[in-house]
Every structure is written in C-alpha cells, then in structure tokens.
Image (cartoon, rainbow, N blue to C red; front, side):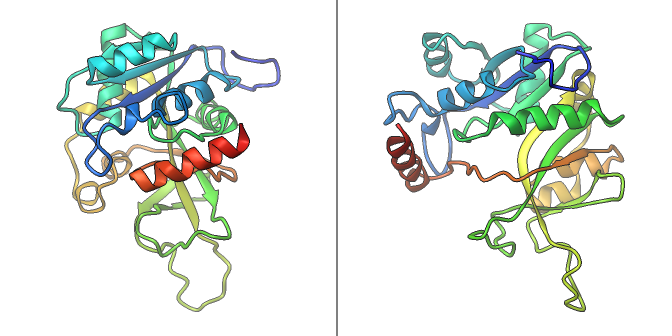
Length: 255
C-alpha cells in the first residue's frame, strides 16, 4: 500500500498482470510451479510489495489461471483470447472491472517473477511527475549483458527524460566512438493513465511497431509521449523452459 515516503498523486494504483496460457516458446509457462507457486504468482507477490500499489489483478484468457490466482488470494478477470498484446488485454480487464478514470494502471509482465517492487514504484512515480499518458523504465546494461543482442530492447531518451525511440538494434550508434552516450536497455514495465488505455486500443498498428514487434512504438508513432524512469534493473523475464529452470535454481538458493 502507499507509504508516506512515496511521492505520488493520491489516485488508485492497480497492478495488472496479463497472463496467457498459450505461450509459443514455453507452453503453459504461467502455471509452471516447480517452486510451489505458479510463475505468475511470483509476479503477483512482488507487485503486492510495491509501496504504491493498492490492488493486484491478474488479467488472463484461461479459467485455469483464474482458479490458480483465486487460490492464492489474488483477484483475477477472464478476458478474450484474441488480444495482440498485454496492453490490449489489460484495457479490456479495466473495462470489465470498471476501473475508475482517475486510476494509474501498471502493466506488470506475467513472466517476470523477479521483478523488483521498487521498479513498480519508480514507473508510477515517473508517470505522476509528468504530463505524459504513459511511463516506462530504462536501465544501464549489466556487466554480462550485450547491447547488440536483439533480444534486449534499447531505448533513447530526449532531454526531458522521455522516450525518443525503442529498437532491438544497437542505439544510439556512436559513429566516432567517443563513448559519450552509453546505451540503455528497456525494461518492459508500463504505467498508464487509465483513459489512455482506451486510446491505445483505438490506435492502428504502425510500421515500426510491426517491424520491431514492440507494442510501445505504436504510442510514439502516433505522436504520444512516454516518460522514462532510469534505474538499475537486473531482473530477467522467463521466455523458455531453460530460463525457467535457471529461475527455479536461483529461487531455491535464496529460500
């Protein structure tokens, strides 16, 4: 719940976790439970620990995930199966749950079990401190991360601390090798002003979004702004069974 040291407007903050069952690279990963808790449950647990969050909701296309969430005491809502991305799914969930227009809605990826509660606080604070309809996180690259890896999305900021571009390519390109601009990796955590989710789903898909397969590019290509909080983030998402096995190993070592 909100604490006195968290500088944020007094509006409801809903952490919405989109979770689908039919993952291509790791089928049924949302329900993988070698730790004794389904994968999305770890995400929900972290979200409840964020200082700004008032409520955690799982938005899913699966009655199995709804049942698993309710068994954990987490609110869940059943959405359509045909959503193209997480923003679309949480937009429908907000409609189904009649989430008020003065709310901040945080899209917390359902496959990031090690998400830091502080990152959720930071993205909400970035939104509250700006006039943008949306905010996200950027992080310096870790020692073992390669900025040229196309699986790690990069972001370039303007002088107002807002996103100029996202890409899987290496950006910014340092032509003269001066080293003045260190690349920033994008952390796929988003905070929205509730009414903007209606706007987002009304926007047509865009060329860069479709080429890069990055949903946030639709926002920029249609002329909307995204505030960016810069902070170190070391957590990793789970896309494959091998990555899940690595997570289980880390979790067992810390337990």
